Amino acid sequence: MSVVKFYREEHQVPLEMHKVRVVQKLYLPTVEDRVKCLREAGNNTFLLQNRDVFLDMLTDSGVNAMSDNQVAASMQADDSYAGSETCNRLIKALKTVFGTEYFLPAHQGRACENILAETFVKPGDVVPMNFHFTTTKAHITRLGGRVEELVTADGLDPHKELPFKGNFDIPRLKKLIEEVGPEHVPFVRIEAGTNLIGGQPLSMENMLEVAKVCRENGIMSVLDASLLQDNLYFIKTREEAAKGMTIAEITRKIADAMDLIYFSSRKLGFSRGGGIVSNNNDLILKMKEFIPLYEGFLTYGGMEVRSMEAMAVGLLETMDEEIINQGPLFIEYLVKELDSYGVPMVKPAGGLGAHINATEFLPHIPSQQYPAGALAAALYIAGGIRGMERGSISEQRNPDGSENYAELELLRLACPRRVFTLSQIKYCADRVKWLYDNRELVGGLKWVDEPAVLRFFFGRLEAIGDWQEKLAAKFRADFGDSL
Ligand code: F0G
Image 1 (cartoon, protein in one colour):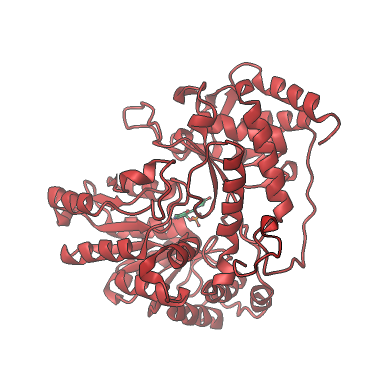
Image 2: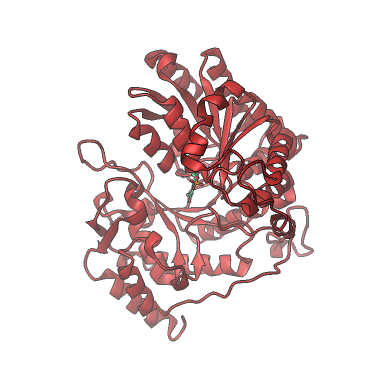
């Protein structure tokens, strides 16, 4: 994709190195209907019906487009409860990619997190990570453990244009281990790349350094490889130490340094499902019995065999830079476009999606009224675009019931891999720009139904005042009879 130069430089755009052969029709409700749909969904984009969504930028999870070879492979699935050939083919692909012998299948990433936490986390334990992910943290705290976030200070600054803002602060990691004692640190979790701080990647060097600190302290290193494919692209294109290495070589170098790797294949490998891999059979044996207990038999782990076949092919395809660069290049295009309009973005562009800094977009909305949630609601009204709140609503309250305000209030616009065309990305940028020019019309949100655990998934909120009707009226005035 990146190697094709346009004759007229000013026309240069990311060029797709694939063609689309199966399509899904989209609908865009009128702006008045969008206000109604949003109210019915409790102002929570998770609760919108997909039929009412034009661009579904909620997530990159389980919604990436598969290749022809993945679809073909899924037709050969060996649908047996135990000992399926499909599982053998998947184990072979995992060995090729990660160099690992052992595999425990699980139905998705959080299932791996559940098993890891159940096996290794005890009350009072501390799990250091560069940054938490919602489900990971929920499993660790459920078992009485605590998460310590050790991302470098730059990682939390949306303005700093640095290549690896997901990196661990290594001196802080060493200090923490010394303070709490290695016996209270069941593992260090490396999230490559990060989810909640703008898809920012880690460098290969940083990951290897973390693994070294773990080894020196007798602590297990765990790589969450769910977002690894975008991170691999960034290592390949941004890191001096990786110049001249292939994606496959970078992957192996990282994997060789880790004790355990787990992943969601809803992201990594353009498929569904997930799993845990390792070369350490002792670690695998400790977790093994949980697979038939929670997931399914050891050769499918709750996954549909067709997904496993697609995963095997998708993982091998992930080693091709021309396949994995589409996501990051489209995201970079969207971030640059919005940045040029003055929209406050997390920079530089990372993986997973484009991230709008809601605190700066809506400076008049106090944190108590959830700026990122309000922005997610407003963008659905503006364009039928479904993003995801990645701010305080996505956090859990403190044990005393007080609000735990997020360090960053972001609206994430995920770019599922190979799903959208560039004109759809341009439409998205256009509607965000309109919203930015009308941002003073956007108001806050308040809870009407707030679940105690993972409230962002199914909690319901309402608009404070009638700002949504006013925003729709302004849209109608500006766009006439356009959808
Ligand atoms: N780890 C990371 C870094 C993730 O981004 C996710 C999922 C998981 C683990 C859990 O995997 O969904 O298969 O259970 N992230 C999705 C998202 C849900 O939309 O960002 P899962």
